[in-house]
Amino acid sequence: ANSNSSYILLDADSGRILYEKNKDERFLTASIAKIMTCMVAIENGNLFDLYKVDYNTTLTEGSSIYLEEDDEILLYDLLCGLMLRSGNDAATLICKNVFKSENEFVYQMNLLAKRIKMGNSTFENPTGLNTTTFNYSTAYDMALLMRYAVSNEIFLEISSKKYHHATTLKKIYYWYNKHKLIYNTDYVISGKTGYTKDSGRTLVSYAEIQEMKLICVSFNETDDYNLHQVLF
Image (cartoon, rainbow, N blue to C red; front, side, top):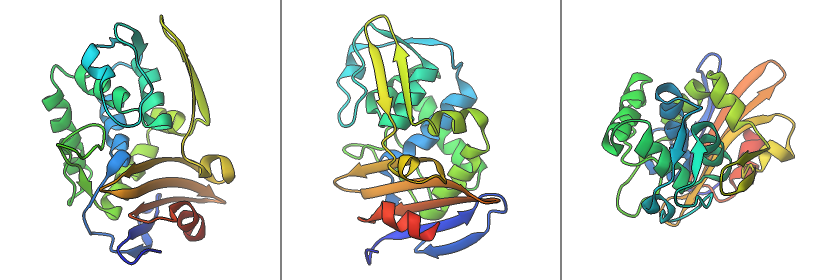
């Protein structure tokens, strides 16, 4: 493990911390912030609303599902593209449409964080990109968020897909989940990957092993997949 990394292993049923290192140290989230984006959308949006893609959304930097201008796509499919491929364009379109304004969406991200006692987290955007705005969290806070998220059936259904295909007016999408452990182990059910140059690697994994439900979160850990398997 890196010396300046942070990680936690949490029992999802009881909320008990089983193992941790620097669990309350704040780091840039990168794309694991999309877990919060997904939950705000599930709780406040209509999954079967069609969202029209505007030109600006197609310009979103970083990882993308390559939305095309004037196409229309279901919120449900956008959430699959968000969680499986980490689409920043998906996050942007979701943020523009669930409420009347993007500011309101970000406000609701922070409100939910407060509600589930994420005491060291701040969200400024729905993507996890950190070029102009910044999302900060801790291993403990992200474990709390994942614990909350996996108790939601729709979140679990979307985030545990190995792949998803979606058909729109303009194209057929076929997405594989970026989280390697969802394929390579029989116990990791769900999770989210993240990486930016400034944040380093971030990773959240949810596992069911025998009767246990476990959440692992790591920040700035280069060998993160291996670390998660070792901790599980």
